[in-house]
Length: 130
Image (cartoon, rainbow, N blue to C red; front, side):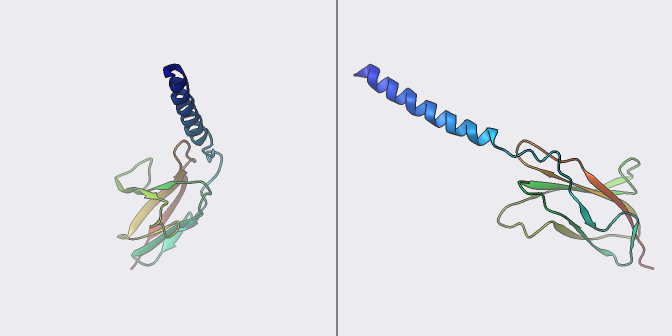
């Protein structure tokens, strides 16, 4: 009787572990996809201090990492933003609004899920309000 009960418990554990492994294996690979930056586009001159950043959403992405540097990432004087935007019930779309001083900037976004991430998509822009 003890052996039969042990076999049942082992069987239940095996079924549970097998179904848990299927969830892990089935995470979609998004690494070959590309986030398209919609605004501000490369070489854009923004004439207001309020800048609206937007990009295309990637199916199966759980989050987006957005970074903003002045003047660019290669010669960054300052990283102004390094933020992860989680796709959950509060997610309102692939966009972010910020207020920036006059100057030259570079921004980039990548999509990610629990196992994969895309490469960063990058664009440079300037803010000139005067």
